[in-house]
Length: 128
Length: 455
Image 1 (cartoon, rainbow over the protein chains, first blue to last red):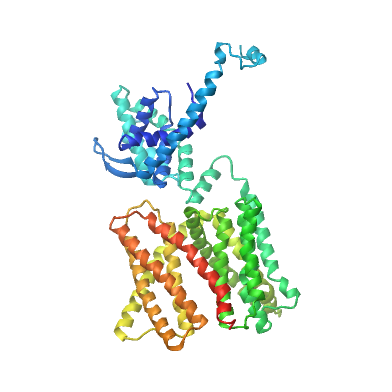
Image 2: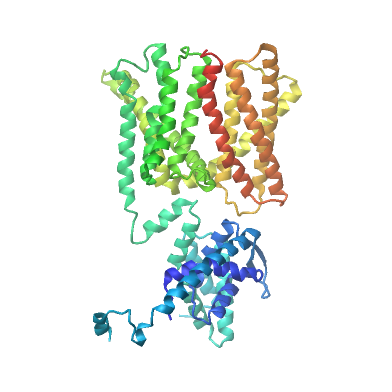
């Protein structure tokens, strides 16, 4: 399923912070982890992660360092700072509220594919 | 045609990415590592080299979009954003509007300086007329600069415009209604400090109201340095143009000197303030290439000057003479050094590790600190002998402010160079200190006349 672009963008920061809270990591591994966590449903454009990491670093949420990877290449690693952990905590609370609210209202709205009440009859004529 | 190896392909990919000004080479290194890791993973999954490369590049995404993201992220390097945006299909529609606005404001400033002439106050008239122009100079042009940025940054709330207007109105009232003695120390001090005070107020409009934001303040420092260079260039060109005008008209027996003195020089000098500001914003890529070169050139020279000066003082045993001209020269030198320091801090990439240039900066700061301390000592000695005067007190205050700034800058530089701290605190210190300078400039303008009885 394609997830809305804005939704992907909004969830990117807490997701990256949460992944880094598991331990230091690097770009490719972070993307792998996202794909793993979402069961492959959440797909990022790989390159877009890097500007985001830079922004997080500029805001002091993560810090970076270059080190040799297992393949012998130089690789840039990121780790969470204390400010980053605090930010993650704030974002977690925000997302919990959003999540709770969405669960509440979306369980009332019946899936239109299953003959939903919320879909206007004219529209059903067009799409069906 | 022979087949390209993987290394050649990656090399080509790198080259393609390097053409984008917004992406720094260290970012490309990081992206390259990503690409290579991805290719290795795909190769292990059974793809051949070519397929793996293509899939990996595809997954990385549209390079234009990535470099645009990087440009936004490095918005402190604002021009790159402009380059990227105008490179893509949609060119910024605001550039035309900005140009109109700049020309409009420049014209308004040029006309404003001529308004007093309608009431018979002439620049090269009596001493009191001249004093009027001297103390009001910044008020003829900086309000227009503030309006330029206010409109450009989209200030729209009434309070924002109100707070922007307050300092200018207050300044106008103070310099014109206080009973200054014409040509007295306090009047000249106010004339020197008011432009600085108001210039720092323009920061409010420049930052779109977010004057507390450190990044915005740093941007304003960078803007100020670049504006200074543009203005100097325009002034040089203007001087040559005026000289030539006088010269060629003389050849056909016409005297244009009065017209130039009365109109071209004052109107041009005012209008150029706005035009230079607009050029900094509009043609930033040009100046961003020159300005760092100039700092690289002048930092060692200023360091050498201060160093040699200290050595000469030690060898000859001569103390600093505290006469008025000498004092002004000294303060000018120290302010220039601070300006140089501020600009190089603002132009530096804060994430770069310490380098040779930072050691040079530390030397500059340290030698300025010694010179400042010596000057301070001389002024204090003079004051204890002859008592306070407006000039000496202003110099004392400025030197004290500079001393505090330089001492703490030295500490922060040493901490940065020894790896105990990031570069960020140094930036923070300087941007926070701007408030102190603004407060001092206002204090000298407003309270010195009262304290020293308008003399």
